[in-house]
Image (cartoon, rainbow, N blue to C red; front, side, top):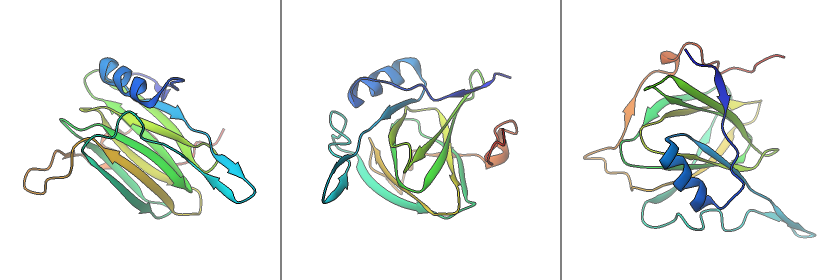
Length: 164
C-alpha cells in the first residue's frame, strides 16, 4: 500500500499538463489566477488548448456528500471548483498510487484526470461546492464510458477532514 500523495502542481499550460498527465498516467493540478478589478473577478480562458469536442458541465454538491469512485476508459476530466471547496481524490489501482488535493474558492485550480484513473470528490466545509468540468468525450447514455466503485472501496483514503 503506497502513501497518499498530493496531486502534483504543474506550472505550464493546461495542454502541456494534459499531455504530461496522460504520459505519466497521473493527475495534474494547474493553478489558475483570478483576474480582478473594481467590477469583480473572473477566471478567463480556462480550457485553452484542450477544448475540442467533448462537453462542459456544471454540478453542485451538497455539504457532506462524497461522489466516488469512478473512472473512464477514454475520457480525460478537467475539474475546476468554482464555489465552495472539494477534496479531490485520484487512485491508480495498478500500483495503488493515490493523490489528493483541495480546490475551490481559496485554491483555484484545474485538476487534470487522465483515463483509467479512479477519481471522486467530497465537499469540504459547510457550503455546497460548484464544479465546472470539461470532459473530452460527450456522455453517451447508450454506451457510458464509466465504471463505478463505492466511496469506501479504498479504505485508507480518508474523505473527511484530516485534523492535524
